[in-house]
Structures are given as structure tokens and as C-alpha cells.
Length: 115
Figure (tube, rainbow, N blue to C red):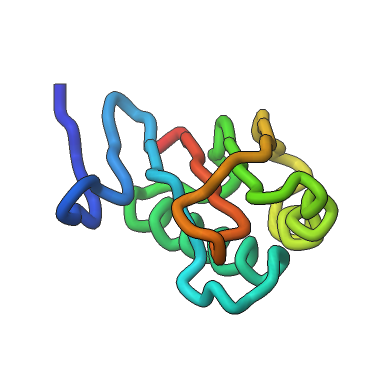
């Protein structure tokens, strides 16, 4: 049983591969001045990056969990999501409203993908 960790930090790693599955940590935007759509775009770019680092890509995403600071931002988040997601390889997805790590965070996304 091999576990491969990518981008290991002080508290957690950003991506982990085990038994043919890639698990990404919850991703947030770096530029918190961006609105919900902009933050989502930044997060999706990070997801692309970490999936590639782990030998996967967005076409192999199995599930996505999206947390929004305000569920009223659902359509704003979906502007970026709809432009990014591969329509031929849609993952299962849940989107919920939640208190995030700080007031400036509008979106957090976590995905699981096949390697």
C-alpha cells in the first residue's frame, strides 16, 4: 500500500494519491479581493495544477464538494464552474453554504479523482 503526498505543508498536504485515487485538500483562492467568480476561477486553476502534479486531470474527477460563504453566490460560482468543467466527464457534486476560515473567503472546493 503506497501513499504518495504532494505539496506537504505544516498542517496538511495539498494532494494525496492512494490506490489509484487522488484526494485534494480543500482549495481556496489566493487573491481574496476577487469576487466569488474570480475566487472560483483561481481555485479551479489550483485544482488543475495539483491534479496534473498527481498524474490526473479534471476529466478524471469523481466528486467535488463546494462550500460557499453565502449560498446566494451559487450562480456566481457556477459561472466559473460551467466554463471549466468538462461536459463529457461531469463529476458528482455537492454545494453547501458554510462558514469558511475567514470573511474574505467566498468559496472552497475539494475534489477526489481517479489517478
